Length: 71
Length: 425
Image 1: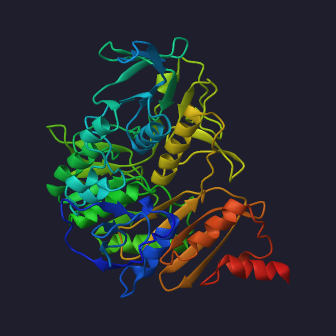
Image 2: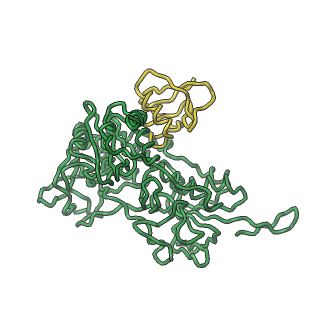
Image 3: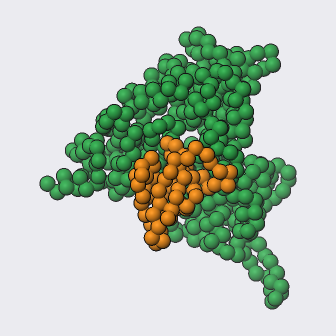
């Protein structure tokens, strides 16, 4: 999945609550490039270019639940 | 072929008719692709389940009590209306008539097709032991299974788990998350012993123990004991050891749903045999998802795969070839992760195959193993550090011979460039 050309960057923030209206994506659903980004960002105060298959507000299930923030 | 009357010209127009059996990710991705590739086609999806496409890899999170129901659903029924797909829930196919291109259902309905996709998956195997069908003994495959498991495990104090593989460990995680003490009965001396050495497996055993799930090796189930109401109350292993349980989770594998095609000319071999275009030996019948025994272009032989990504891709590829045969091959390196613990686990390719392997502990709690066949990577397992997954998958896709350089694969921070530099020397 190519990087989006939005110029936005995303980060993953650990979250203990999953809203019922959130789109939840398991790590295994993600494209390989996005999986690499999740490995880089999960649990770390880092950002990376937004990827094509995650949106702001999505929740990713990896070793924990992470909310995607894209700005 | 379906004939419609064009109201403007009053001339009949013909559209292709596609029928898909199964609304898991393989069938649903095929329906979505067919609608894109054949905008005027008639598309019908038949499923024996009572709900439309949901996220099968998240239902374990629901059973753990970590996720509500709503985010598990992927396609609301409106999706099918919006995409002009005729979805039939609770519809059991009882016969496939490939001579007359027709499907017959349990309610006597007949669906004619031009092209058929079988995305019928599998059914969990039951242990061939006494009382294996007692109340409180669960198998885990559908969302409805997850609901029953969640309800049952919430009322349980202790549990028994059987099936030392990728599905069985979900039961361990569910028990751990719901504070149920469990005995995980394994026939061998390690969890997933066909893909892990004892060293790698011990990392997983420790994670289970931390959650109150005790692995028991050299065990298994000889029979279950039930109470007067027919509810499971204990598992007895072949050594005569008795393990009390209010709940039992059994995950010993799938029976692939090939009985539908038993009386047809469609070839089966541990599933429905398809070529690299996902077509069976019957020209207008395709298959996708767990059910297929496919021509794995990466491995160079027939293979099976049950991962979400593989099933989704197979559905997409099948649909494109249903519209135009030969348009796209299925060529995929699959992976499957376990995200129950505070470290990640990932298997990729075919880690139980190969004629050689290399493994190493790369740091505390980090372990990896790569399986090789004729000097080429065919699969592997990563625990703790998933960073080399893209490099290993790339080498698999390229079919690179890494003979004589396998030590490099075990280096922390390994990249394909390291190998290339070594090759050029």
